[in-house]
Amino acid sequence: DAGVTQSPTHLIKTRGQQVTLRCSPISGHKSVSWYQQVLGQGPQFIFQYYEKEERGRGNFPDRFSARQFPNYSSELNVNALLLGDSALYLCASSLPSGVYTGELFFGEGSRLTVL
Amino acid sequence: LAKTTQPISMDSYEGQEVNITCSHNNIATNDYITWYQQFPSQGPRFIIQGYKTKVTNEVASLFIPADRKSSTLSLPRVSLSDTAVYYCLVGDNDMRFGAGTRLTVKP
Image 1 (cartoon, each protein chain N blue to C red):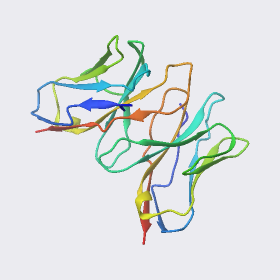
Image 2 (cartoon, rainbow over the protein chains, first blue to last red; image 1 turned 30 degrees about the horizontal axis):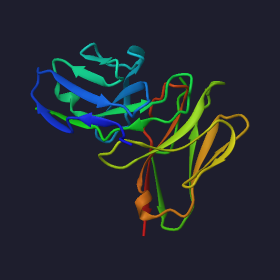
Image 3 (tube, each protein chain N blue to C red; image 1 turned 60 degrees about the vertical axis):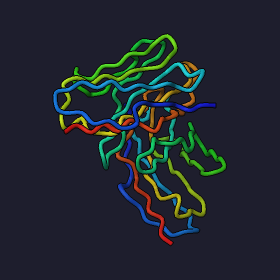
Image 4 (cartoon, rainbow over the protein chains, first blue to last red; image 1 turned 180 degrees about the vertical axis):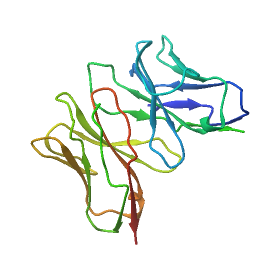
């Protein structure tokens, strides 16, 4: 079975640009979460989506937005990129809310470099 | 959200047992305790999860005292490939990572 897939794996942008990152969850998983991981730090929670609705939001500016599609895939958008947005962006999927296992399944991430 | 506290780093040698303790004084009744392992440039990987007492799987054990204010991840007979960052998470569907414990296994 396919795991969580993310695209693109690497990308380079310049300050002020916009970026869209994509995530496909494991089949059957309806919840998707996004994390930002800066080098040397733990993953920081950005968003959680379940059934196309936002279920949680971390302490990130409004430049960060996300959405979840009917097939449960998700996109993370970041506008007006700053140098500090350079990081590994991780997507994780999990079983539906109410069937809690605590287990997040992570993709390999999208490494964003902002110049 | 319950905050977790772990040692920043630990060193060990191959073949030894490693115990990493996590403090979570404000754990809520519905919260589970989950541990993840992360290698450089990879997403974290689930190791083990528990609610109370002891849980064991093929790679680790998790010990949780009755008050649930702490937990200990036990890795038996570590090898060089266990060098990684280990994260303790406490929550109920809202999983937030702390800084983790960087474990270095030496030959």
